[in-house]
Length: 395
Length: 152
Image 1 (cartoon, rainbow over the protein chains, first blue to last red):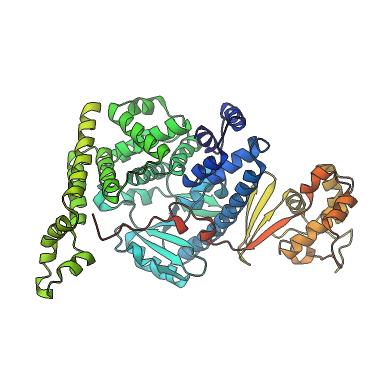
Image 2: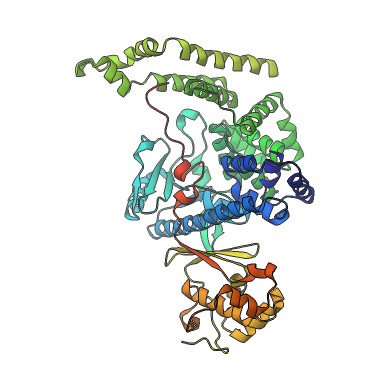
């Protein structure tokens, strides 16, 4: 694990390099190491660092395997980058404002090369009024909407059938139910020009992008190290970031805790160097506790068991990440509402006549209790309540 | 067309996405939808195809860079592979007639030590790799499925 944390950096310092070399000659379970790197989606960085600093120390079979994976990822990423460039050009030709984020543009600016980060899709942002035209353009390029991700509240997923390229067309960043409100109009006003393979391309302002990355990671519960790497690389590449501006935006977006959590994880796990005033903020009791919990969860990749437990734990985490009590209540309400929506299983169970369809929502809890008993509900309540008790102790 | 010593090949750069990493070069050809991984020898030769260097010049450069006794066989094989991969401009894409010597023959000609076999020119080419070939947690084949609708 230590070796993984040292290797998951694009520009390790001299001390880290020495540490990587020392760890490589120690008793490393290389198989486990590769599994970990793969599950955290940081194989390209890991191979890159191992090949530069301890190619002779790691087993040659392992290095050959990693090299093959690295090459496959590199070539696939270049193909995706070419596709993104073509899409940007296409949108530009049709007068549609578009801003790519994450993916190849970010990998090139943060890691120095798109081949050092893995990414599975191309994320692009358009203005809400341009969504229909953007959809038509993607259709004309051979994409179709992936219907398993419908209904969409903030983005549509497109897949190109011939080679499986995935494009996420965003018009907002966060699900309204998550209660994070990023001012996209302000964000559009701050879009800048970046160089992408010799051609100018629109890029998000770094102050906006780091906030988006931090909130994105928090909304997923920080499951993989790759997303923490992005934050750490951001801090490294943009040392003159306007932190006051980001904090202001984070506060406006009701996501200050999530932003600070992302920074704290980057500092704790990957040694990101933060300015002193930001460090002071990270020392607050709540952030420290959240960081410890998130880091433990990420490194142990704990499996909480059933889907009920997993979802309840995730709800608990999401509630912890909100500063305002009102947002927590809204989040809880959304969770409850989603669970109470009737579905196919209810229709099959009750088989009501169409004019009694409105009863499905009322009967759903009855079916759930009949089939599953009170266990799942009690488990959810226990997890939520325990979390609250822990909060009270830490603050 | 025979590859004469005075030929001055030119590297093709149009419609290519190029990533230089360490000693290797990754190239994606957006025109032919092919991806190539050039090893250090081919990469070095390719980067010196400026239309001014002749094959003899390139051979000298290779000898100096890699410390081999004879660079010309390496350059010829590299150019042949670059031509096949469509990474040379038309006017410089001269192809070697006849069969190429085997790797062992080249190694012998170049007087490489056994450990220097990695200098043998090599291009790994594939058709455009699909995202499924290199998925990631947040996309491609590892995209997390939507939550099951049947339970809370």
